[in-house]
Every structure is written in structure tokens, then in C-alpha cells.
Length: 453
Image (cartoon, rainbow, N blue to C red; front, side, top):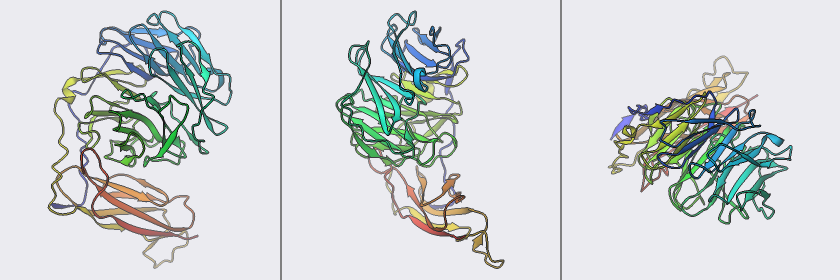
């Protein structure tokens, strides 16, 4: 046991990391499908699709005819020959193409005729059964499916709950729509004014939803990616892509198949994609780098600072990432050679926050000259003192208004634009507890700031 004033955040980088591939294109990639250790497909801007059938030694760079101006944000491949690709955009820019000859020819199977629709992703159960989704139109997500691998039709009996105003999905990595390989359950994750996980067990005919602790409330925040290890255990990642270094509320996990989601250890910032390498090892990528966990997200460790949009894995020997400006990378197996311990968890005393100090308790544009508790600056400094041990732990902040800027034991509470009133800031220390989670533990502390006109 020891008294800590600043949190150690496991920010060191693992050697080895990503190995850049030589691919003759400057397209930016977000679609990624890893079929095997040899066969990998990716899709991106400029109507571009790339494919390797020899584990990355050589790459085919394909421009889909008639799609030179389209951005293919998602791809679902099944072998070296068959793949679906989905392009994003309003109206007719949202399309689905399919190849059955390794990209030599492409057939346009769907072209969106609804000017209000904007398709984000496609997911498949098998070569013939797939589903695609659009952002909400008139308050409801739009779903289409194919059952023969050729024709796409609306899901008429859709019972997907209504979207909230300002709620939508992110076409950031092709993983806002996801099928659990363990049992075929279908998931859709949202962002914007809410961050929810929608689930269907009957291929999109009926749905339930769960709320999550992922950050929300702005156009750039929410859940960006979901992955499941088995029928019960899974993770979601996200954050705010406009603030990529903000770590709070960027990761959550489920142990009941998606019925409920709990906050967990935080990666190094906003993450647009995540994937399981096996049931224990996770990887997450984003614009400010990538992280790896050897304990289902209980502890994260920084892999690199590479800007990546999507990640996919087919066992430890085939872990791939893609990003902007033609970036295609493969993870060096040495980077996952040495697991990181999650700590013993045997604590002689209960850890927790002992103090939360604020630089000011009153914010007003009309502070009295002798009132040292009052500030005309709407950014309040917060300092935390807490007791922990030499193992993994995190400080998580819960403001009732405004936003937290920064990380660790010294942060800023930005109340700019917040209406007059009294607001609370609560901080908790969370740490590994049980098999795979960070449910929170120890003592929390709360402090108050009043805003006056």
C-alpha cells in the first residue's frame, strides 16, 4: 500500500509493433476482412479494394469500375474469390457490390434510392445471408438484407427501437454492425446524442437495447466498434474522434451477452476499432495509436502511435490494421509474446479516493474582488488524492455538467457554456475485480461548483 498523487497509466510502448506493408495506393482504408493467415481484403476511398492471397507478400490493388468516387467503408470476404463491399454517402452513393472472382469483376447489387438514407456497414452470417444498415431516417434505422447472396430487400418486420434525436452510427471501421460468430446474434452500436447497444437474436426482425457508459452527447462521440469473445463476453470501444486523446468512458464490457455494459480500464484514447485475437487477448486502434490487452481489457498497454482506422484478426498469426494514406500493417507476433499481469488483487485494505480538491467552488462573471473561492474562468482545476497499490488502477470522473479535460489525478473541469446552477463532480478509483471486469471499488469523493450569472 502507498499513497499516490499521480496515477501510473501503463503508457509504455511494446517493441515490435506494426509492420508496414508495401501497397501501391494512397487510398484511405476503413473496411477490413481477414479471412485467414494468407487471405486479407481491405476497402477504402477512390473505389479502392485491395487483396492479398499470400499473407501480404503481394497485393492486388483494384478500382471498382464506375465507383471511382465512392468510399468503401466496409468489406465482408469469405475466401480468395468472394467478397461484398459497401460504400457510404447520401442517396445513390450508398451501394453494395459483390465479386465472385477475386475482384476481377464486380456486380452492383444495391443502390440506395432514399435521399435521406446514409448506409454505414454490412455484416454477413454466410455467403448468402447478409444485412446492411443506414443511419436513422425519420427516427428509425434502415435495415436491408439478402438471403440468396444476390437481391437486397428491406426488413419489413423491423422492430428496432426508435433512434433518439441526434443518434446515429459511425461508419468508421465497418464494425458498428456486427454478428457474433459464436451464436449469430446481431449487434448495432450507436453514437451522437446517445451511446446504445442494440441486439437481435432473429437476424434483425426484433430488437432489444442496452444503455452504456461510453461518452456521448456530441456529434463525434459514442460507440464506434463492438466485438464478442463468445456468447456472453464482449467489449465496445469509442470516445470522441474530435478529442482523440481523451480516455474517459472509451471502453466497456459485457458478461451477459450484451444485456448490460460496465465501464472498464481505458485504452490510450478514442478507439474506432477493436478485435479479439483469442478469448483473452484484445486489440484496439484509433487515430492516436493502438493498445493491446492480455486480460480481456482488464489492463491495456500501448502498442504504438500508428494512426489506424480498423483492426481484424484471425488468431495470433494474422492480425491486421488499416488506416489513412494507403496504410496497411500487420502486427509483429513478438508484440504479443509477453502478457502483462493484471495484478494479484489481494489488498490488505480497501483502496479509494481520499480527497477531491477544486480550485474554486463558485464560477461567475461578477466575482467580488476579495472572494478567492470565486473564479471568472469557467475551467476549474481538480486534484485527487487516493490510496491504491502497485497494480492496475484507474481514476474515472463523473461530472453532472461540463466535461473533464485531461487524465490522471490532475485534470480540468470545463464548465464553459453550462447554465447557472449547482453541479457535482464525483471521482472513483476502479481496479480489477473478479474474472474480467473493472466494476469500480473503493471510496468515491464528490465536490460541488456553483455557477451564477
